[in-house]
Image (cartoon, rainbow, N blue to C red; front, side, top):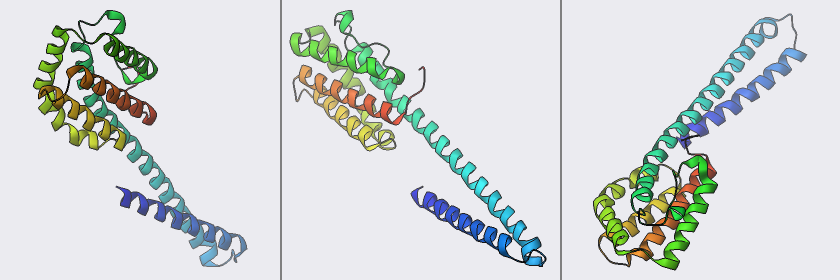
Length: 206
């Protein structure tokens, strides 16, 4: 993709240079000659048409790529929403994370920070710990399989997803305290959401 974009930029510069040269020839040349009077305007028209086609095609490519990335981000976000919704049912309502849509970034960060502070101060009861561990056991393989999807977004998305998968596996295998790993997961969910918001890779209103 980068090679194709580079070729487009180089070709655009060549066309612009040719258009400038042809404009100079048309302005200063002998308008009565065939080359200046007939051929030069035709070539200028071709250059302009090609530039328009290139710019329109480039814009279409950019928009198409962004739509695809937004779709991939949404697929990953749905798993994070599921985790946030089902893992903290026993936490007081005022500490739970809401709908966690990309457009609600500021609200998302405040809610996750509030939940993290609650877990740090109060811990999680036995029922919540069991629920989180069962969720991690059930979903760890699926989240791990989604690493290639995360890699198609940005480096920050991929790093955040790698760490989420790591701490999910830590909980599933009981290698680390569940509360501690849960906080680490929440921190990386914040990181994921922040990167999506910064790159505008989210569905408006959803």
